[in-house]
Amino acid sequence: MQISISRKRDCWDNAPMESFFGTLKKELVHHRKYRTRDETRKDIFDYIEIFYNRERLHSGLGYFCPADYEKLIATGWVT
Image (cartoon, rainbow, N blue to C red; front, side, top):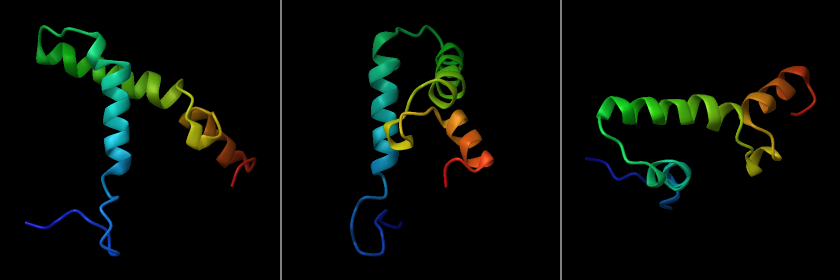
């Protein structure tokens, strides 16, 4: 077993995922009651692939959604 820490011995490795899962729970999961695992999987998949990646504005990307930000990078508007 290996500890999940960075080379400098800081435990920041999990911070981005913890932030994402916190957002997922706050914006989706805590507002729903799921009857089946398949229903849960589909709802979370739709949230990530449709809303989170294509529509939701991210402050770390200058308030662009990831899909639009990638287009800006491809066109050279953002580096």
